[in-house]
Length: 332
Image (cartoon, rainbow, N blue to C red; front, side, top):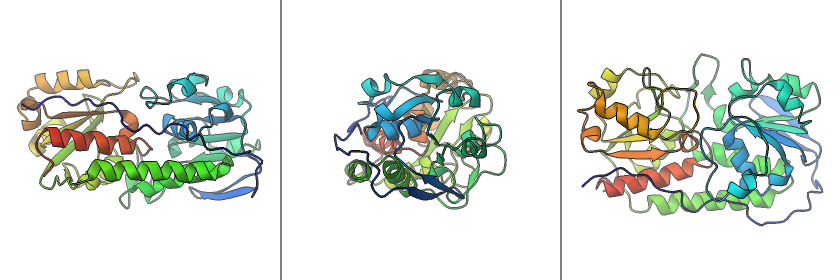
């Protein structure tokens, strides 16, 4: 009776309708951000948001008219934001060159990941700041996190939604609409409360597969999937690693034999097995995985890439995994 779970996001976090004259009262805004001091003298009017997560926060704050361009998308835009997102030029599906960004004449640049504005990314933050363009990186990607090594970094402490809420509130302050930030956080908190009401998934193990079939990226203990897992009282099959997205061989995955597979359903085309359909086809045909309990019983929950990264859509991840566990009879 178990079945594939693919739910639409509920309770979208679209623009609040709150108003602000954007006059910049309380300016300048000065923030401590990922080890740097960022000062924004007046509310940005021509911002470039370099990652989907950052863009969706700005759209949810009703700031589409102040975004000059965006880039680096893994999924369709969050439900409820389609019309606003369609107005914004996308200068690259993945990371753009710094020249493309500067061609937009930005007065503010935001990113979801430290690597986007680091060595090997779009450009180091210094390059923009030397030109008088303030930059901002999501606190969720640098608080209690070591990004100095290779890969996607590792967590020194488990991530909580506070990092995401801080990003929402700080971006709202930067753009002169702090009341919208508070309202958005309140809605996100309410959705988590509703999704987890009465659920008890203790004893249930989850495995999160983001991308790649040859050397799959599976979630470690303490990033966004860790938030989802803890909110539901479940256990991550790879909670013994603090790496954000370690690459783990399939034999090890099969040995862990999780109860439920949480699968990234991505639309980008930079890795193998990006879509959920390709991931499931692989799981059901690969000798190492086809006899796993979750595969035999088709206990799959599909998530957007954004829900598996620290973002406002991590709330969507809590909702979808909770619904999946209930449908599988694993919610207590």
